[in-house]
Amino acid sequence: MKKWAAILLSVLMVFGLAACGDATKENETAAGGAGNRKEPEVTSPPETESTEGNQTENPESAEGKTLVVYYSATGNTGEVANYIAEAMGADLFELEPTQSYSSADLDWTDSDSRVSREHDHPEERVVPLVANTVENWDSYDIVFIGYPIWWGIAAWPVDGFIAANDFAGKTVIPFCTSSSSGLGESGELLEEAAGTGEWLEGIRFRSGASKETVEEWVKSLGL
Image (cartoon, rainbow, N blue to C red; front, side):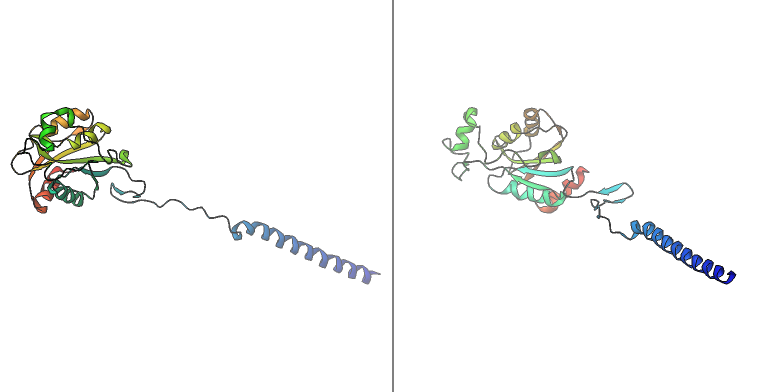
């Protein structure tokens, strides 16, 4: 009888140990499941690289960019505008009249030429542009505005762009090209017409100004 009791007790102990083992295994599986289960991956936006206060932003969302806006009647202003854009890593925006000026139109020595008539009749200086606004205008903090000098002032195709845009919060730098005339009051008159923005003193470049001359001026601005 004692023998059978001992055998029965041994069997019960074996079943008991097996049950504990299964329970332990089940608990370990449950506890480790969260660690082994593959959760949906969350991708963070690319982090910006920084070096002691100098931060490089994601180009797609960056603000504070530079824009070079220009009207070029014969190509001289366009050449300088390209030099500035290259030196500043800036975008370019050319102002194009819907009715472009021909060589005859630009002959200021002819009293019957287009520019002469427009000069003599200011009401005719409203020159429609192909486009007078820039995409993502708000993303630009610095705006260069270039033009040739006509009768001591900025060529009037620029006026439509000035009137169509809000320069609040922007640093604006005028520049011009001419064979003889200086900048004059052209920058001040554009600033007055704009009514907003922080306008810096501009500069006049001779026709055919070298790339080195333009780059030296850009560096002197400290922007």
